[in-house]
Image (tube, rainbow, N blue to C red):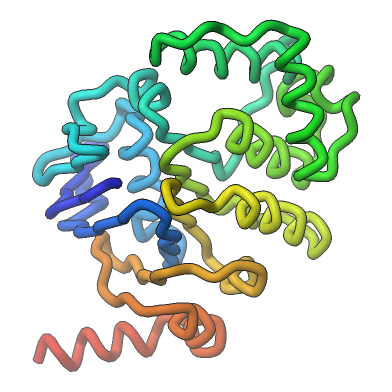
Length: 253
């Protein structure tokens, strides 16, 4: 699905990522954990194609193509989706119009016929049930006046509507109460398949109480320094990150 080799990234002459290696196969869910400022969101933004980041070294191969050669729009049309840590409000543009336009842009890029309003409404009604939202939600402006939980559920609604091959979820669990967390986790779990991959970025283990990742990675000082399974996330929740720093320091001696 996606293979990242020796990725180095800087912004404003400051190096943030210092040699990321990550291989995500179809159907896998990879979790990336780490403290604030370690480069987690930078990695997500680089994959999505945000232009302010400069890739100075390394490669990203997605579905056999050089991802760095693709525009953000082309990446989306190729099935890459980024859920934002802080979803942006778009006053004056309702969810129905926004989602329908996005779906049709992808269909057009793939040579498929655009979906009409009637068929789209039927489809979106089914998707709304997955994230426990009523139909009035899609007639509201995108994220305008939404609560934190509504914004995150709207991100998951966008994901399951656009049906990406690779979903990158940047701290989708932040600011959620337990009920909203369960709804968001259910939306992700229901959407998992053997052909669809996920990179979930988070600070906390609590989201993983409701899903089973294939791999958990720790991002520290711009590098993935440790990998494991769900037990690693539980250990981080219990002990924090200092013990990994101690391990790295001992290895360096």
